[in-house]
Image 1 (cartoon, rainbow, N blue to C red):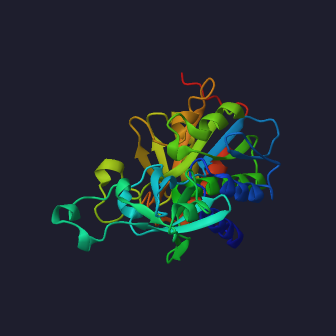
Image 2 (cartoon, rainbow, N blue to C red):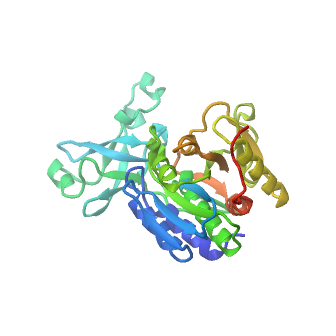
Image 3 (tube, rainbow, N blue to C red):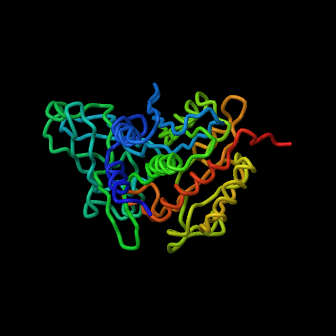
Length: 356
């Protein structure tokens, strides 16, 4: 099970604001933890952070989890000091209504609340309509544009001001589960691999810009420069053990039901088999997600780096994705880290990923 120290690191990582394009603060937290055991730790020009373990010359395996989260960015400040925003990443604007926001201002954090026309003042037809981002504004307590601009600027990014919450049955809630837990898991897996290594050189990577990564984000850069033979992306997927879930659309994936292994599309069949065999060898529960086209994760771009990288995808079931209160099981995080470490141990100099 995860140690108390690891859980404390996880909570610190989740609570540190870092929307896509503004990931430097959580990346620094990640690198500080990596430096306690990795043989080398580095970052690159796009913001990716890497931690190398067992750099003994064997084939390179990269484990990638993106460290960014969805957020908002200031687009305009009006004469009365109200700020207007657009999303960084995919938002349902309904979940922003009446939320508290924390902006990363030039001189420190700036707090504000999301405003909307009160229901009492809406016409009947307006009440039936879903809110759009353009219907919302942010009140930071300023009374003029000049006062607001002393603290907040156009282009400042922000996140929902929501901290980690622990629930019973080893469950945690956070605004940044997607996918800061992926960055956590790959580092935890590297730690466990370092304690009992195989012959592979393993590189854990906290990638950037996945939520806006229409051209590949940080994963595209990291996989290109790593020289990897094999890659495993770690992300979240939809848990389907809650009311209204459509299992026939995305499969059956339970909170606490173990890692989810993707199969199909960009997933290399040999990597999938290695992951599945490792899970069964460990006696670990898991489920399978069928991906007919793309996975909408870092895996899509990692597999196309250089001459091609044999790529797999391990996901953690997540409830309430892209909301202020995403929910996962600590048991699933622990199992995913064990699964990655065990799978890395199966990679040797003789492992051939060529599809014949």
